[in-house]
Amino acid sequence: MRLTVIGCSGSYPGPDSPASCYLLEQEHEGRTWRLLLDLGNGALGALHRYADPLAIDAVLLSHLHADHCLDLCGYYVMRKYHPAGAQPRIPVWGPAGTAERMARAYDLPADPGMTAEFDFRAWDVPVRIGPFAVTPVPVAHPVSAYGLRVSDGGGTLAYTGDTGPTPVLDDLARDVDLFLAEASFRTGEPVPPDLHLTGADGGAAATRAGAKRLVLTHIPPWYDPQDALAEARTTYAGPLDLARPGAVYEI
Image (cartoon, rainbow, N blue to C red):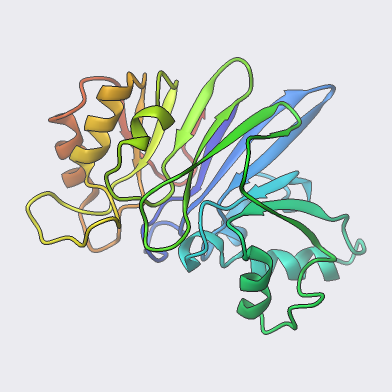
């Protein structure tokens, strides 16, 4: 499968990137399947550079903070009012209450909300979407949040979403080909518990899990991403990158 970084800015869109959004693509049964991992502020516009937004097969939301889900509002408008006509419903997986949260975000009545455009499904058990097998893993965050492990039978990606340090990351990233880990905090600064990782935290989890490659993401614009990279290098010796918009990884 192919991973394209659409947006990787942490907590809000930055000067060089939208908020969180990652495109997964794989050829299967004669066509290209496409998933979005999160759809944060500013990401829908940037998505046009890399894929037709109307060709997305499903949206997978790690949690319901604005920097991970809010551009679903614009996507709702696009799918409902596109000149080519209303588009077929596509599945949107997320925490329980996603449909109600998105209806409120666009000031819609809860019924029907966006349910004519999206088939909202709550994370519960592993799911299969075309060639992709997706396993949600609850992580440590102030709201219901999930890390996602995605495999296509040939490669495996693990995505932390937003999380504080937690032992479940070791299983989430066990032997994966690419570990996409948030790195919002810096070591040595006061940080709330169960909120975010540092670069060192992500590197340590990648090392314990035996991840083959580590890509750091979700770094807020107020920090220098090189600091997160330097921290991760102290705890992880394998291939290491900073996410950037337009970066492509073959997994």
